[in-house]
Image (cartoon, rainbow over all chains, first blue to last red; front, side, top):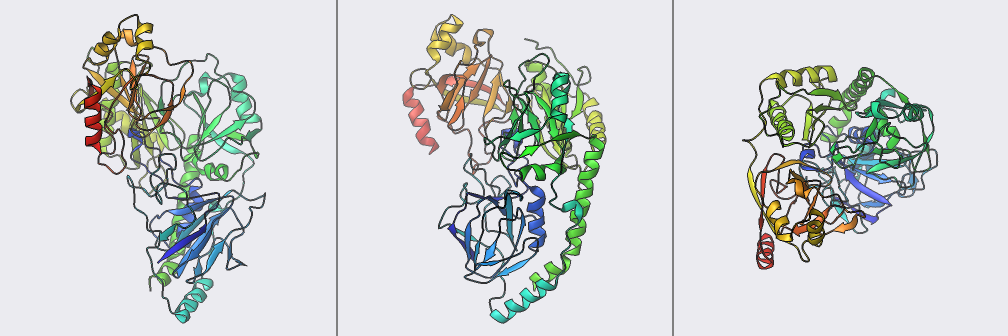
Length: 333
Length: 241
């Protein structure tokens, strides 16, 4: 039971919820950039637990299923095809042995990252409690790197191999209604919402105003580690050296040059730059789907409200998980 | 250096949110052994408290970060977690002097191992032997790890090792390099960019994700650097493999 990589794509890495628990020894969390799409892919592939999904960036890979599998794709619509025929995202699908999954070009109005989950998960060895790939560190995921041509990735679950029973299963899956609650939709927001960072008060009034009112452009020097924002320069009223301390996903730090950097999934666990603000957790998937050259605007929000929205999203995941019980039951047989 | 006992009840600390999934506890505003020990003691206390929803407790020089999931079934909201932590810290904790391990780190100083040793000596106005003597004094603390997996920040060294960072950072520092700046040392676990002054190298592996524990040092460890020669360096490096 495996899939073979015929073409690797631009940057295809296995990611899960992240390598938490080791940040105090300097290990970055990594994990899916768009955690919402990653979790959806797992649920729609009939997984109860969190398994790594394949995070696919802009140009997708070409993969051959060597055994029957149930899979689901979420996030950016990178025009997936199975044996040349377009297939739908956001629902469980069946691949037969020998089927080839390929991707087209990303339309400009879609996101940049798609997530491919398989029922039962990929056979990967956890490193420090996670199967997320940390490319810079060379560990996690598959061989600590992005997919390469010729890689063979094992699959944990097996499906019936007889063509009739597989057709029956595909039919049954097709009957399952999949309704993704609006709290989990991939809608793009006009404004990403911010909480003040720990050094917010030390920035000039002009910088505070600019961050909340100006338009910023995502620089081409942006990757899984951080998004650089081009826009009005930001400055502290009295610049000073900041001692290294912990950062998080969505922390906006400002080096002395004044160009803001939003720290993303592969961020270092600590940083020594002043932190002006923090993108709220529920808006990070939206940011993670934006590409260099795209613009971004920010608005402020209260902490209570940000945590309420986070809880609401969690509730939506719980509901979807319950609604998909029939899917998991089908795949168990 | 302020070495007077300092407990959390006598020290001022403040808790503030860092976004919606992390909070910071500040114990001071400058690098200081007693503030560092307090951060580490608080880190131990909070880690052992196993607070629901908390995923990471990350000490640094003056602050402690608590990463948490506010959204699960038992995950706390900020106000709730801050109140819990406030209660825990209000117990009389003393700066951590007991829980860290004593660690000896062999270092081969100067030459190809420490290309900046001469420059550091010149800057400090002392001989290279005196730099090594100051650097190998006992009583250093691993304040934190960060920047890269397994990279420790160690201090506080003698005032004479208050050397600024290099004007132009190197794009690639060899693994194992021991470098100083601002009365601290860092050790590079892998080939990384770095602006600190390299005075030596250790043959020991600082990070191996397949090893338990994965890092040579932990926050709170007490470190003593031990000078070794090139022969010993090679012998220890081979023994590592």
